[in-house]
Image 1 (tube, rainbow, N blue to C red):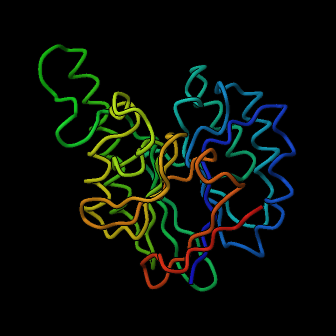
Image 2: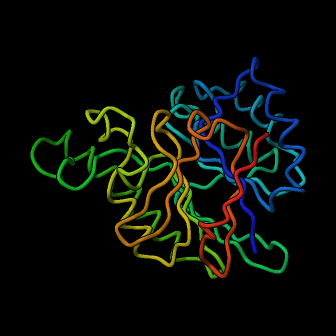
Length: 250
């Protein structure tokens, strides 16, 4: 069994430092790794990244994250990544990592992702150059995720994104903004690999649970949705034990 703690959209700044740390110190008793689904900061500044690193770095379990749209706001995403990496946090963008946990190999492939919408209400790669560029960006992120998912050999494979791969977990958000919260291409990438679980954030008013068209469990772990420092999900033999998900109140 592999236990994965997950959260997203923590938006750390100086006034948030110390809020999560007491719960994070309990992680070794609760989970084997912590995955964070983007929006680590409020405005993507280096100072905020340092605050995040102080809060989420130096833990007794591996920490893996992707960036979110807020982490790109100041156009300092490369510097933000450097700060996190220096703190021992693994940052994924179209890449994957394999963690050795209790004799099992957990593969995590991640990307920020992008918007574009879902079947029946999505942008298409047609028309003006601006629209082609928008959809092209979506497709590049999804292709990178698929390549990353297929690149690892592991006992259990998790997809980690900021944007949602399915509309299910957006329920509660205005329909008008679904296209800016996720895209079907991410879901296709997840279904085209032996993915056991998909985690995302971004949809603060969405719902926690969903599935890809191919049946992969999807969980929206945005902090405003789960309303706690993290949830814990159990992976058994490459699949999620959905009947016995641990929801840790901390």
